[in-house]
Length: 198
Image 1 (cartoon, rainbow, N blue to C red):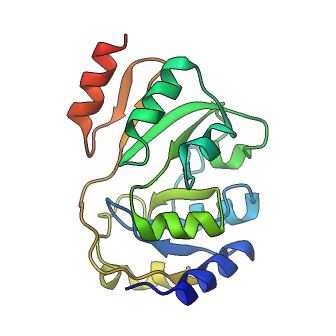
Image 2: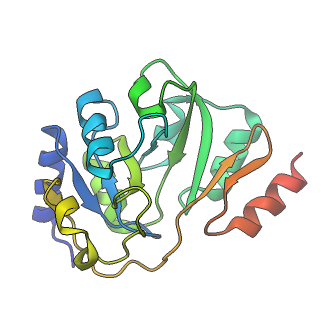
């Protein structure tokens, strides 16, 4: 059971530019203030992730997410259907989104996790980076006890909610182009929706 105090401490660390490991409905994620370029850089460093591989960002609800991206009618309909949930929707970013988050691209992935603890953290601080809590290329973590010790040293707080329910990452989808970029949870439902709305 995650306490309000633990969430408040994690939120304080994020506001100070720190990194926090937090649970989602798929795997544990690595959070930083997605609008703070230095904090985003720290995420890339901790994951040893190439800078040209963009990060997604997470919000407490779809309405908040849509304030940071340009979304057409079909994208909005998709967001309404699938978020919150284990889906990352790639949309055109607005000017407030730092280039470091997107690897200089003009599009960014949007995530609204369907997980009470993740949403409680996002209600305190948002948007946050939404990427798995692991070194790039290593397996995703469903239990914080399995965090790589060297990786663990790079983060300021771990919100431990035990084992997460799903061992697979989110499905990443470019709705505007009708394309699934990464197969993950609920992939079949996403493909069916895209086929119906082309």
